[in-house]
Image (cartoon, rainbow, N blue to C red):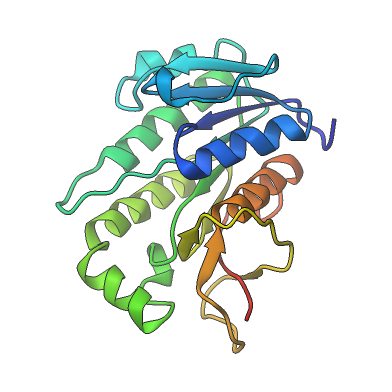
Length: 218
């Protein structure tokens, strides 16, 4: 068992990043509760894995996930949309309310480069995608981050740029807040690496109460 926590609750557990969080958490010896909309999509079977079926827009189903209160919550929710909507931020507000009700204080959210004060950071392609394709997604991620800021919880938001399916996990990621550092970066991060950093933050409390941008170095 590594770190001071024993149990983690993962939202978005069947997405490509969420599955990495679940797998790596089990590898670290944690007990994991996976919150899923479609149980068939959770392909992992493990004695320390508990599954809760629900919807982040239904507070009662979220409340059921806290029947065994976790030590930390990880949000790996990937919601893509081309029109304005608030599913992510509304669902996050429901999760925060459940955490406050059950006395759970540590939450780590996988956000995105382009949210909040990182808007239009990245490569030329990333900036174009933020402006034209991901504008409404990033607006809702920005609202999500503000909910975390206002929650009174111990929160961290990780903002990766383009996510890849590379299975390798790197520990040399460039992290920054504010303006990007003056160094060459790929503006990519593997989902496996994001999961590693999310669990590190959940276990150690690193980057508490901050939104952290990230990229692989060149």
